[in-house]
Length: 278
Length: 278
Image (cartoon, rainbow over the protein chains, first blue to last red):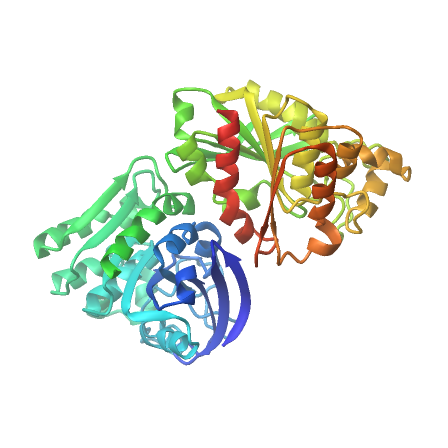
């Protein structure tokens, strides 16, 4: 593991590291914020999964999570959204596929299957890297959240791994990527033409298939340009209703899809997680 | 005036505008955050002047000012740090001079005097642009602060314009640019070789020359790499002591010169201004 930067903020430390990844066969970069409480005890871990086109850095720069994470004593881990590098298969001009668009799945199709294994990376490899790094993290208390593609990632990973995450929430998640225009082409390239295999990476279909979380918090801006065609939170609402999953869906009047929306409701989400991970 | 963006955040609106500038003879860009209170009444105006290499955008992305500005009902205006454009004289590889390094002065030397008039721009032109724009701003209640070169700008503009700003503070300001290695070359190019003319743009020398503010708040990181050679807050401390200016100088253990330092203490500064502009 290589330390890229270590900067004091809000009494804690904002780090960026890179490390060689077995799951993705490339060097991966992640950000981790340790609150001041981590100096004396192990703190809960909150995983933040970013959206399309983002790296670890967008939320680190614009997410405004440190003041509340420092207050409540929660660590935030912010991974990248895909494998990276000249050797990684990519479609340079396509922001909805390839680098920056890993969709938190494990690809089965060539030439992507060797590198695009973000599900395995997030669930298994990066936790081991963090444990080996000796950070003061309590892996018995993990929560997960994210934005857009990362909101989809958070919900699907929580659904498929009961007990692994004590809390899950999302900002403007893609709730049904297997039917949305902006994700179907990526799913076909990563997972092949047989849509039956896509269900394992689709939040609403996983719920239909019997997967469950205890409860779910979602914030969604009403002025989000992707609301009608890509995000469709009502599909999640319907699925949760049928499955008796308590969903708090906050429609936020006038907010868009940007980090100005996310940062506005960041403190609410971190409080919600901290209560459930206490 | 041309609206570049308008995004809802923390119940208020974060805008970016550009406009043709008479003072700088180019198009200038600025950010303005209006808190929710501005929907029903005029709110105090807090000017934030950025440091070397920055535009209006660095603090907008990383400053974390909106949550507290929205809570306290203060508007933030964040101008650019210099004139910009292909026609503007510049030294491309020099981050301490030219574009991104206007030093909030009015240049007297050619070829810079036509464009590098950031003092006039901030004090006279941009306020007129904002008034003409019809924003709900109370120009009887203005405060000013900034970072590094912008901290220097804030202090010097407040010193030279008694009564204009009701409050002034700075993060890691350059307190004596006329003697610091990283600003002397810029001062010579903008203002000429006669150092007597530099005193009008030097915080500690202005205080020596009898200029006053009611009080001053400064936060400075102890791990700031520019502390010893460029910033030297003890020179300001000495000048304020001699001049009986109440200075609160907070040395912040372990903090550097970045926006992770600034954002940590942003809420403290905005509260301090809001109290004085109430």
